[in-house]
Length: 463
Image (cartoon, rainbow, N blue to C red; front, side, top):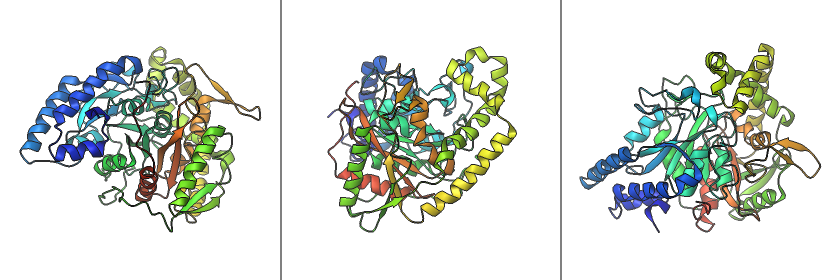
């Protein structure tokens, strides 16, 4: 096995034991980038020399006994919404082509303090306003979408061009590309990970979280990221925690919510089969399955768009009026649509969210975790704009991909996607676990228990 193939936890163990140096690991990943990046387009920019200097410094620190922890010497990618002082933050847009960050975002600062090594910035669907990331190809099939908006981060992790990466999630933008590329994606509880220094799409829905190869890796990254920051008004004041799950697989006494409604409606048959099989595996580990009804399902997508579009429009108001031609057409149209929405529309969406949060809280009193598909279908072809369901219903690809992920953004509950197999074309399928606010330890425990019962996952084949 080459160093670039190692999970974060395995690489960290090897670095701590001095069986692997950060220089060897970073060189291996950079070699991998040189080989596959021209075919995949995961990165906006690669800071190879900067990464090599940081690896050399980390190697010296480890040799001197100044090991900082499991992220020390680990190469990462950051979505190009996340500020790193002195580097461009373009949001994969011509609008921000000349923008250069003057200081680190909170998450970049915390990862740097933990010793992680920045490889470069990964592509996003422009300003995170989309579910496909058209600049980037799927790591399993270059003719299919990568998912979005954190498509670059998911493809980098799936292809071995980053050991882990950060993404942002406003309507599923971590979980969708993670599921479509066969990796783990975690959207934390709203406010658990600070967003200071991260370009916003919709401030009341935005989250920052990790994309990793394993659930344990996600826990290691979350441990470094979580914690209060007064510069983010939504940041939660919660004590520091170690999110690493235990090694056990016994889920006896845990109640898994199995949705009767919504999450299995208009879902590809092979996705439903794989996810239900994975849920059966959780039951075999001792969990109790409890059927639940998802509340207010008819209002979910209207609430998501009713919040996101006006907030995005407000953020982009100035540049939309001065340089509209610099936006990609799909994003510009969505932003222009924000001007057609009234204050009443926005207030009604806020009211709907308040009611939905209360109803979800009551539902989650009955179960510990809800298990469901992450997305309704695997990655579609890059030129496909709609999907037709067996009953004849035609749905836009972006609407389909956001449909099952939006509830966690509206309510702010944590959500984790874990790979649970492949369809007949070899494309990954993901299971989504949703929990109570600040319920990350339970989600990670369940996801890790499932993962331990499965064969080790290989890197993506298209790379």
